[in-house]
Length: 238
Image (cartoon, rainbow, N blue to C red; front, side, top):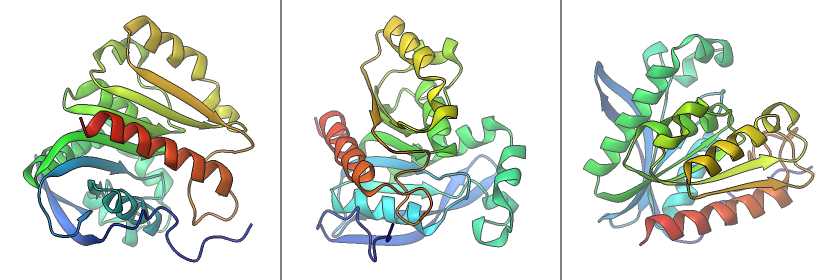
């Protein structure tokens, strides 16, 4: 499949993007901030990267959100290890970091967005980042909307702690992640959480990544992105 020559997530609105430093408990971590041109208050979205770190694809996601009217920040969860760009084999490095640190860094990104004028807060994440998104939703009352793409379930006993709404995206052919759908569906229903779980036909894991020729599914990615934007608009623009 031919990959897009430009960012297919852009909605047409003018944006401003920059590398930033995000304050955390032990100093700062790096990240990428994108916002509608001209500044001002707007809903905010934390963007959590795949298990390949803060690659250009995640910057495209942040830019796409900004072009739709959101302030978006994508933290590099490998900052303390030297940053994504310095690491040759990223997945094993990420896997050795305690999950609690990833969650804490995402919570710091929420506070950073609030300092940038963000009003209501959402979070979106992909693959590894989808799992982080689930966990942050169980730990932060500031999250009004969470959009995990093919993310591993959070601890099911923590699901009742989710205060916001959830829209979870899955690829039909993603057997490993999809094995957890029944459990998370039951947990969300039991907790009374506002939620929508959608499986996109013909798509596999990481189908939204328009820079990954082996996994990208243009039809599923386009539909899922439209659904994610509609969901964020409903829950963050009220």
